[in-house]
Length: 367
Ligand SMILES: Cc1ncc(COP(=O)(O)O)c(C=O)c1O
Image (cartoon, rainbow, N blue to C red):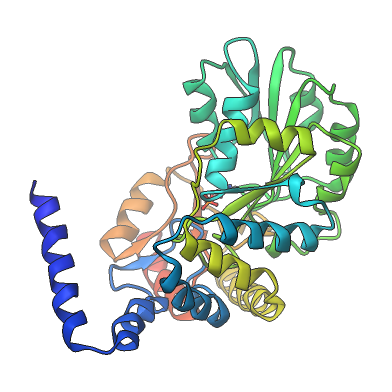
């Protein structure tokens, strides 16, 4: 009740402002949010603190006029642009309300009481919860000693409906080499679906890494998930997508709510797809800031898992939980506990000044 009253007051307040201000003056402050909010140093969710590209913000501003319409045409435009960028046909692309929706659709479509989900430990956990909700058994296969997926073991689990491969992997930031991924894709029976989550694709620079989107042409059971939440800086807008064969996209789509996308996110994503400069800047900033933080931590004798992402995993050589809490008391929010790696702290690479705050707090808390 309270919440809806507050929401009502906000709407009335905005309405009153609208009565006296010209339209652009109302719209502009909404986008001042590319400066980080003042609720501490947020290095906990692998977001991109630089936010969407200027072109995406401009596109959202233009999209205000389309807010009253269902998103059909906006979806079509984005699907066409994504299909073109990956050289696939438009019926091989499915948009999702974040790539989280794609993960959920895959779990609902390909797992169940007689079809297991096989995933690594640790990895991005969400899909495990979705599969359990479908009544599926979830088999966790530990990463190997170099934090790669153990794909030979994952592929050998009997009764699997879906294999989830997160590459690069969250929370370790590590990659699974392309030869191993190719071997898995070539050997898994067609009745088992493989979902390769490439959320951090744009940050990977290792020559051992590759996207598996080209393999979709010959493997109808392969699904690749991508997101606009990371390099494109749109985590709060919610937009992701799947690329797969026509038949698999149709299967996923039957589980999806109609019109699950919104026109703001679609407009921003469309402007982002072709904004190579914004991607290149994001990669450069992340690489430079990451290198500097890693060097500072190494000077303090900490081991860091080589990272192909916008976050790092630090071996703190003791129970990480008190350190996570201690960092919070200094206003610095780092990643949650990952039970399979209780001595590691996951830290998102933020802006240089955020990482300076991180280093100051970390030096005190971990001393
Ligand atoms: C590996 C991975 N996949 C998927 C997601 C979900 O991203 P979104 O739903 O914002 O696209 C995340 C979020 O952190 C992630 O790390």
